[in-house]
Image: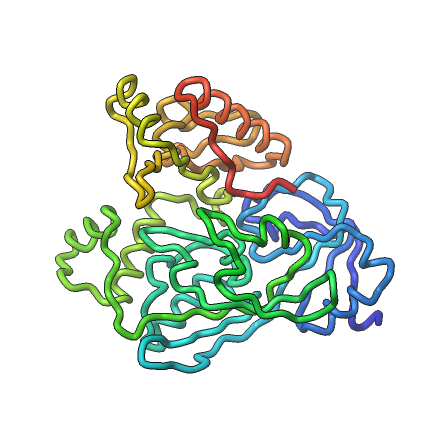
Length: 342
């Protein structure tokens, strides 16, 4: 059992979360194969501990002391499973780096994930958050996943409907939180590929490059360039990417806000509601470039909170609350944080 579960006590997590918070785990374990999860399930002491499942650490704000068994998913592997008249089915293990997986699919001549290039994190974390960017969400190309169920000790396959995907949400952030550990994810990528150019920044970049009919790889390159220009590199300054969800409001609420704020940035949704640009709301409240302690709002993009060096989880939380308070006071809209506070 010792060889199967090489537990590390009081383990430093600073290099395992993109915010760079100097947290420590009560117990830490890297998972390289399924038998380790089964061993945890059958260990009466470990099973009782609170668990934190860690992927790339890109969607977390940690407290200084994480009183839990922190399990880092390191399962590797990716393959084309099969194809039919309409789709190529591609599968990757939970521990695969997301961006590297996207580039791999493109190298195999399979398009469909290119708009999600350069999103930090792992494949296993992608469906939990229903990651999305530049006109595409995971749920649109998702087929199914396998997971280890800590309630029963079984491996289960969960289809798209059962995931209950919503905007930056899924059942894994709700009923299955801390219960299901994702092992692998399967995607159905279209054989009749079509470029998604409905996001203005992507279309504008391609136009500047004089690319009229882009390939999937060229769209990927565009998305990478746009993200690198807008978002800070976590290696250089700690951050968790976009910190707040873009709030959804009714048409009536948008109309009322437009009366008071004619330059309001909003996007019509299929439901008839409107998505507001959270970054614009934060910027209007004067937060861009400001700091509370060592936590701050990124000077180039108000939607991103950053660690200027030595920020604690408490400082990041305090900054987030201050931003939420000001936005709600000015616009009557409550911003919801994307990262999970641990």
